[in-house]
Image (cartoon, rainbow, N blue to C red):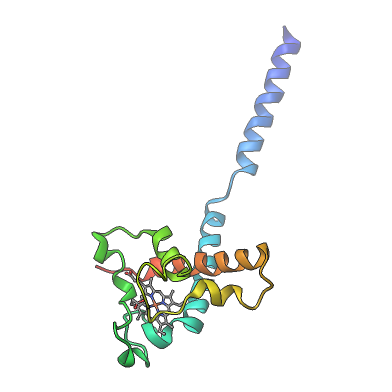
Length: 145
Ligand code: HEC
């Protein structure tokens, strides 16, 4: 009986230790998303500002020559009743499945561009997904009413 109690006690301590040390620390859960957003910002500055502007409002240097004009990316959610549809936006930016549906579009087909420098295998597809993921995380932070 005494032995059993001891075993249960050891087990209990092991569980507490696992929960206490193995679980994510509060400050660590914030970091990955911050990294994604920072990476997304770098992508945005490199690929998107010429049309959408540094603040994403659709007022980049070449915006004036485009019909339709570049979308205001700070109001993606506002245009959809406050909902930010991450998967839909990623697919739109990707553009590879969208081209025929909307006829011509002034926006480059980013899914093709991001994959282009890499041989067309699964690695290229992962690179495309990585770009889209961080860009969408960044776009979320730009949303306003
Ligand atoms: C050559 C100009 C140009 C560049 C560069 C560009 N876009 Fe666009 N974007 C547009 C135009 C124009 C539209 C409006 C619809 C259309 O014609 O495709 C648009 C629309 C969008 C939309 C749709 C918004 C909505 O509410 O549906 C998103 C999202 C978007 N762009 C994201 C991006 C991202 C992210 C990048 C950088 C990777 C980027 N754009 C680079 C021109 C551009």
